Length: 186
Image (cartoon, rainbow, N blue to C red):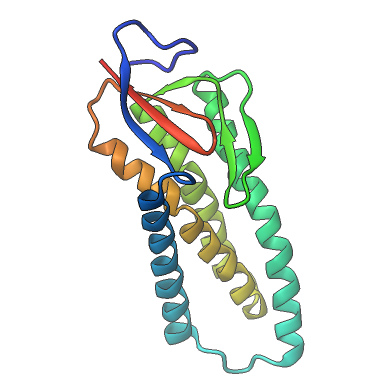
């Protein structure tokens, strides 16, 4: 099934995912986010520790982390939008809902196109951040790592949606408003 602008005949809504209005989904995604954050931070402290970090280093890390997280958030949504365009959407829309930044589209994406759209930022930006953590000087480790924590934990919604879609039939189409997804099947 290809991604399409207009829902084909014979399709009806089979799954609704609304990470703002559905409290159970909201709690599930936020719990996943917290678990990922805690696990990644504990792993960093155990494996890397804090030895040799000065107060000046902390100030530097705080500034770099704040700026980096802001830039990352924009890049994350632009990556979703880029893949929406690659898979046929003419122009995605972007916004911030109070809880989430989002990219959405007036388009129906096939199952596998949407899975790629959902996972593209965490995979691509995660790879870039992992390489940066290896090649940059030690002073940069925690700022880049905190952005990576934001990358992985912030993708909890994308991971949740992907897990739901992987259980769905092959011929589904996904309509993503940015804050909610409606899944249609034959």
